[in-house]
Structures are given as structure tokens and as C-alpha cells.
Length: 355
Image 1 (tube, one colour):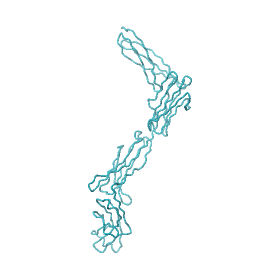
Image 2: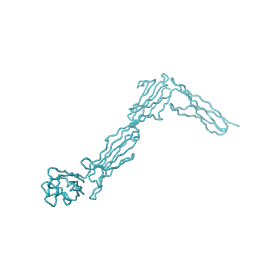
Image 3: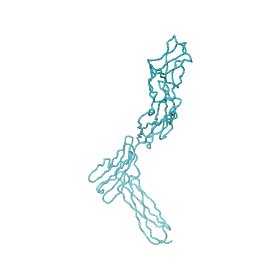
């Protein structure tokens, strides 16, 4: 442990302050003193002192005493230092103490811990290792010292909710095991929503069911038709489930869809940093044809999705399957379109094919 210290003496004693003078740290009106220490440079009035192997029993109030071979002997009773020795060092300090930033932001975290013994400062480590860190021993205005480690990284949505900790490890001079203390914070990374590809619609005879899954921070989700928000009613059922802190799923079921125009149905997800939307195709007409070649059958599946405000979109998919000569076969063409997933065509034919 190091105590920063300086002192003054009266002008008449200046010549008596020499290198053989000694510094003592004593308890007032007692002969008890701290031993096993080194002092910086008394002739320059620097009484900064480093004590070794401090124990809890040394926790007392001490006064600086100057003793020189001549008549210069003085105890500075107007100033004292209270020493408190504990088995557990103080926890390191994180700056800032909380972290809430947008994705893509450059983050700088500083961990600092007291270094009561500058010759053996605490070792600082980060968990997890998100980026580069720089360690430096620094000095306070009162000349006490502390160890710092600066961690820099780019915030990613994968860091959201992650616990970032800094651990300080102090070695003991008496040979006992080292002591470690930790401080942590939970990262809050704000990122815009993304609607997942698992968001689909299925259609039955009397209802349409669409599900929308989105990930992002502090999510909100709405269903919209013709620019108007759809709300729960007798004919429309909407349920929303929070899968985790950044994952939201909503399901809308529309009964008797033939009585409604759902061509502009979309899922709209938003938060404070952005938004995402996905339009679903719920009105599709399907046509198909097939042709026979020597060793394979080719079917052409045509999916036509009609929109009220957009031009008709045609999507053609070629599906090939190999069949043996003279055998019966069944062709099934499936396609997943970014707005709607449906089995487009189920063609059956049979017979013997000859060259």
C-alpha cells in the first residue's frame, strides 16, 4: 500500500533535513509504529511511503513523524491518515455504468480499479472478449494510483442482453491465494426489426391464417389492410406472443375470407430505430401443364397473384423428375414465394411411353 505524502518545515531547520533522516508512521501518544516500509525522498520533502504485507490488524489512524540525527524531530499531529485493511478489495468501476446504444455504434468501456501497491497493480480482464483492450496505470490528483483497461468494440444485435464484466485480480504478499472482484453491466443494443422468412399464410375453405415473426429491440407489431390497422373482432382473430426479449410472433386468422378483400394484407413491425413490413398474397389463381420427354416429365407451375394496386405478378417454376419407361408416375410441384407459400399443382398421369 502506498500513501502519497509531502511536508514542510520551518526555515531554520532546512539545513538539518538530510538523507539520513527517517520517516515514521506512528499512533498518537503511543510507541506503536508501522514498520517494513520505504520512503521516497525526505530531503525533497517527499514523504510518500509504501508499506508491505499489510494486514487487517494494521487498520488504525497514523501520524507522520520526522526523525533526523540532529535536533530535528517532529510529529505532524495536525494531519493524519486512516488506514483500513480488508481481506476483500473494492470492486472495479465501469464507465459508463450502463450501456444502451444503436447497433453499429463504436463502444468504449473503461474499467478502473485501485492500485494500492503500484509495483504490483491488479490484473484486469474482460468477459466476453468483444474487442481490443488497453491497460494503463494512472495517478489521481491525490497521487494515489489506479489501473485502467479500456475495451472498444462495435455494437451488434448479437450483444443485446449480454452481460459484460470486468474482473480485477489482486495478488497477496503473504503467499495466500490472490483475490478477485468483478463488476458487470448488461448491454442494451437497439436494432431495427427484421421480419423472418418463416412468416407465411395458409388458406383453407373458410379462413386464411397468416403468421408474422419479427426480431428487433422493443418491438411493436400491427396488421394492416388498405393502410388501416386491423383489430381483433368476431371475424378476425389476432394473437401475439413474445418468444424472447427480441423475438415477437403474431398470428391473424380471418374467417370467411371470400367476403373480404385481403390483397393488401401486410405485417408491419417497428421500434424506435426503424421498421419492416411484409405483404402477403392471399388471392392466387393456379394453372399448370405438363409435357413428356424421353426419360423425364417436365411440369410448368404458374402462380399468378393478383393485387389491387400492383400489376399482376407471374412466377414460373420448372420441376423435373425422372421416371422409368413404362411406369405410372405422379408429379407434384411446390414453390415458396416471398409473399405466400402454397402447393401449386398436383398432376397425375400414367401410361407406357415409347420412343
